[in-house]
Length: 135
Image 1 (cartoon, rainbow, N blue to C red):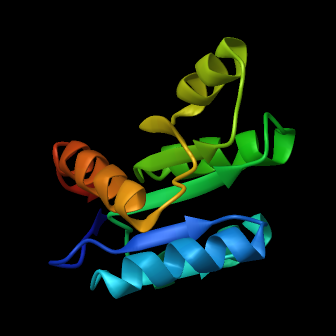
Image 2: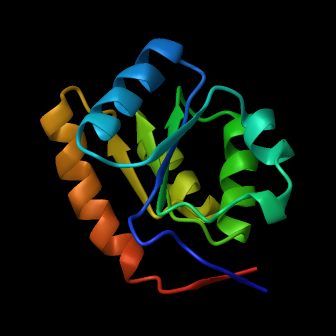
Image 3: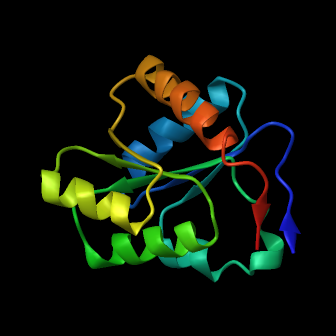
């Protein structure tokens, strides 16, 4: 079954930190991007697959290397959704584990709107190279 993307890529922001999630969503919407926000990993995974249009890019905020975050990352990778893991800091071991679990990229949490939009530009072009997504 083929999953179609919107003509303009949509961004999903998944992070338990409400204040940070809100800042990212406001910056993306302010730049004209469609955005969905999820504060709970369970909320995102509970959505029936048929109701989900494939996102252009998923920003997954991680506080560190936690089993719940890794399980979500693996699930999103199985759905072939491009995921950028955003972290404050991490070790090389953790960085490697994120990539092995299916992250398209791992980046520092953006500190400004300009930093976020630069990250969007860099990762959106990378995600578009992946082509159509198939379920």
